[in-house]
Image (cartoon, rainbow, N blue to C red; front, top):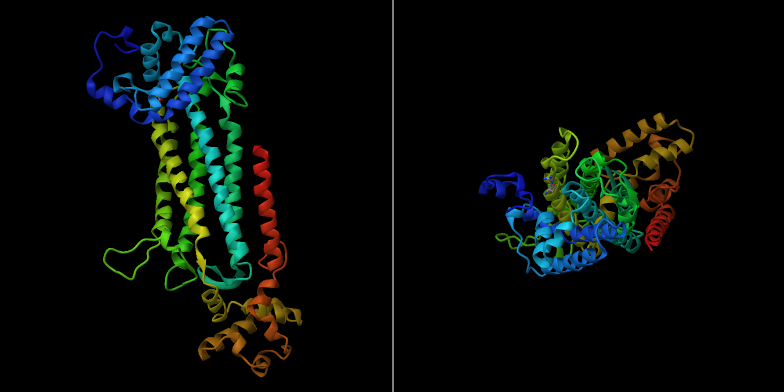
Length: 463
Ligand code: ARG
């Protein structure tokens, strides 16, 4: 008979058992479920809701149940619907009817909310650590290649030269926002719903704060109806995960482009690429492509969770069981991606010459010619028009700005002097952008310094 079978005169249809049960996937929650139950039973004992002897038996029994589940020795059954009822049944099998006292003052509704919060809390902390390893790898590339100049793009057209390190640091700060968003989300994740009962609270004299402290929560959920219906923390995780996916995907798109023969800016290490079954010459950036591709499922999980929640009346509804698979999938997807990512970045080789060639065989110093003329007294509009003419003529003659002689420059504007050749060198162009956040070496070194301090300080917070 089912744990809730008393009110029923017929068994559940077998298909319904299979359809409604969640044990296939929520067995992942076993360790959190038992952890929550251990805190709950400690509270029942402390508040004299059950006897110390009963509580001690339950505590010992729960520990045995968990080790059996973890060793794969416990039989989890679909008839018991979910992890909560499976654990309770296993407990009763282990210690007898006294196990039936565990659920005093508790409902599966506050229990599952608790389990999910414990799961999300751990997942968030895990992702923060992994994101930091990616940031470190990007900083490592920035430092190793601090003098490498590459074309910076807008509209995927070569725009102005930048330091490759500057480009790497753009992603470091992007991922820093992800880390901060995850850290911030912990404020909302880390509240205990236990003691909210099914929806209205409990008649037993429970001590919710005690349970919260036992489980390292920062406090309790303030309203029992909200506590059992709230899955905002899952949405936030999926949303933060989606944005992490967006960022990783943008970087992967660049890695895919840069490793093509057309760009040849980088070479991904053999250990992070794959071959073609037909074309022997190929080396495919599969890992980067898959990371880009997996972003789709991260978005999918977010949209499906939002959609599941949007029409739900308070308080708990069975629809909410749908929070789990997407949450687990996004967590595992991100974990898988991030575990690989730092290694892929660290092992990538930068083709300095190719990047430099792309900068010099181009007109990406045109803005600097315009700025030069402004410094010699032209308005920016006048100078823009002059430089437009210079570039157009150069394109027609198939030469670059630095191929022109001083006399040729002076045909466009008499104010141009010998120092123009120095002013248009890629190094000068880059280092001229020395304002904070710009691409000059000094500015990029300051960015690296700041990012390293940010990484250290948030590590220190954790200790
Ligand atoms: N398996 C359920 C879930 O994941 C647990 C809560 C069930 N509560 C209930 N009253 N049916 O949401």
